Amino acid sequence: MALAEGLTVTQTMTVTNKDTAIHHGSGKLEVFATPAMVAFMENTAIACIDPEMKTGTDSVGIQIDTKHNKATKVGAVVTCSAKLVKVDGKKLSFEIEASDEGGNIGNAFHVRYIIDPVKFMSRL
Image (cartoon, rainbow, N blue to C red):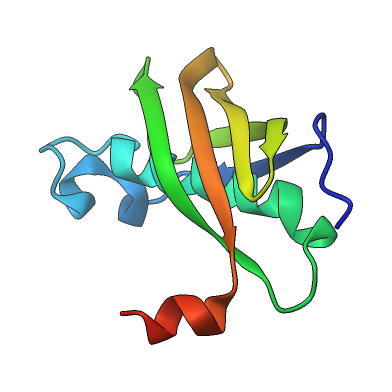
């Protein structure tokens, strides 16, 4: 595996009605929902490591500490950047930042764990 501290990736998305707080049930407003931002952050962390993952492995999120700093309107473009900051065996730690045209909207510290998906699913 070529997973190394310092790997980074950046992704963008446009906020749609399906990404809003009212749609997710996390509020009553048509603004970018915290659950949607968290999902985008996790997806960006996955995109950071996927090209370097060994065939037959996957990763699962085990921790995410998030701060949602600012509301974002429908139609806005959100950019999310993830950086792999620590590799401790199968435990991977990321720093993640999300922003829109107005600047920072959220930050997270995220931990993923490398798993064998067949073994993982057989234990459920």
